[in-house]
Image 1 (cartoon, rainbow, N blue to C red):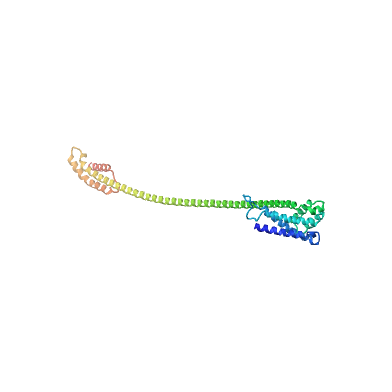
Image 2: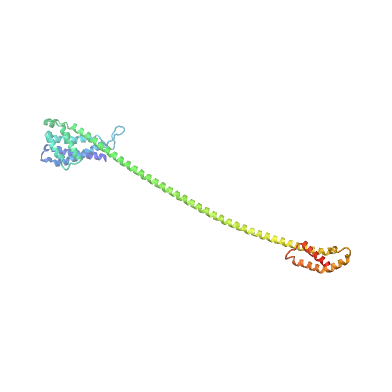
Length: 335
């Protein structure tokens, strides 16, 4: 694409310059109207700028040779020089070497609507350079004007401007790329922070859920332990009740056994005074007294022996008390 641009730029600039040069003899005549020249000069200036841009973009290789992608970087300044000298010579010859005529006509050309902005700046620049290089001698200007020197300096300025423009554009592009990269990095950073925040929240939720599950399991285990403890307590209470009942029954059995033993003891105690009764009679008349006591005490003894047997189960009576009571009654009757 660059080689095509160079070729087109060179061909167009030479063609436009030839159009001016071909009519240089009538430069101030009706055939070279300012508006027509302005349009043609604007096209030529575009080509000059394109040539300067292409040349400014030429980068020699490390071995000193031009980049093979470019047709030939040396073609640009050479083509510009030919085109520029054609235009400058047309101005010199058309004005007859008169500085004032050249100034007046170029001022008219540069003020046309076809030339604005950068084109107008270049138009005034060409006019000023041509006039500053012209001497007061019209003949000398016509015959020996050094257009090559003027175009060489003009080319250097064009290339410098393009380099500066390219540097500014490059800096602007790099700044835009840097800004875009910073914005992308900021967006990426924000995305990472948001992802990290979401991960943190998710982790907190998982931790809370795990804690809740652990608490629920702990409560469930506690409830099961409480239920198990209640069952154990219930079993223990039942065992204690059974043991207490058995103990009570054993105590009742022991009490009944003791009561039986007491009743038997009392019965034995009642029978014992009957054998020892004669010892209570006076020694002078033992035989009659013994007989009388035996007859009188027989019913009493029978009743006494019968009564304890009936009441033994209801209320145990001490054997000594029964024996004492029976003895007292026996003695009384004997008297």
